[in-house]
Length: 71
Image (cartoon, rainbow, N blue to C red; front, side, top):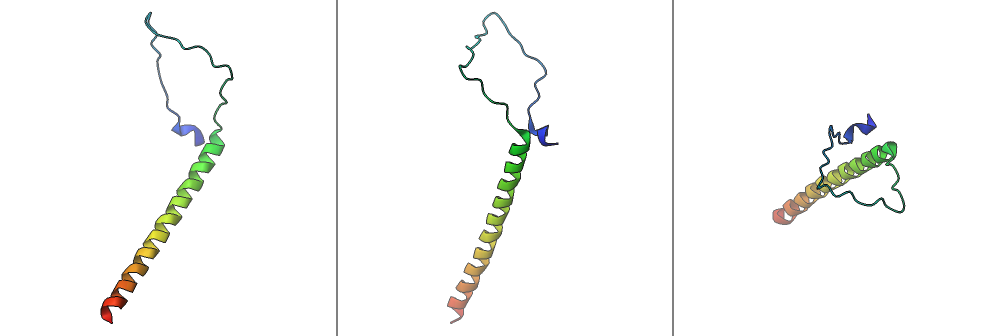
């Protein structure tokens, strides 16, 4: 389930004009799907917590406004 985000490409077209880049000196590491999935879940939880905090602060702000105008 964690690897479902990966883009699937069905075909690769190479022509005579295709420029093939040189291989990097240090090969890149393969991404770790489990780490990516866990990190994205952590980010989603942080975002949800921030939205909740924003909603709470908005309610508190509106309550303070009402108190100010009622006096």
